[in-house]
Image (cartoon, rainbow, N blue to C red; front, side, top):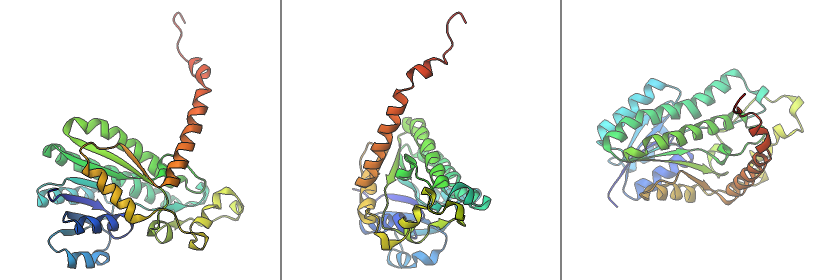
Length: 280
């Protein structure tokens, strides 16, 4: 396969770092965004010709467009754009501060929206390309104590699914990746927790505390294997709309969707009762 160029946000850790390392090892080029270039100094040293790091904060809309424009201009072409950067925020809805709400929405939702919007004119001009949005199985299911994280993931999935239909005529494919829990910094390092209220102690809203403690067992997902499957998805000519990574994630997603469909199936009479009737 000829060398390809990838643009990936959030390459300093987690899936972004693993994707970048695997792509560089196989001979591709990567333009990666970080908050701190020092976090990827080793990659810059080992791959001076194939890896370029851009400093980017996804809450800065103007900077997003500047960086994506520069990436396409200087690289000549970008074959795959991976919107990966994001973080987790845990706590009951009323425990979260206004600043926490605004920041996670800007980072996990509006930032990726602007990133994809900024890439589309370039990909359309190329006449080909792939957009991969890293979401979560939390974009299909919801757990207590994760309300704002779910809000961003459900939101970005709706955006990406709509965009996929809009840009298919231009040879641009869109894939939403829904990983389950993985052994990355996302869960065991970068996750943020609200100021917890005693009122929610011993309720489902604080169930996430056990999950964040490695002493209770590590997440089942292997970041290296997950990254490899993401790369493989871009190697296929046809872009799958969604891929779920992790058997536990798939099981929970299917169980949730079956329950949701069963609930909808009971509502035929209710739904029909609100239709306008001829002659009314």
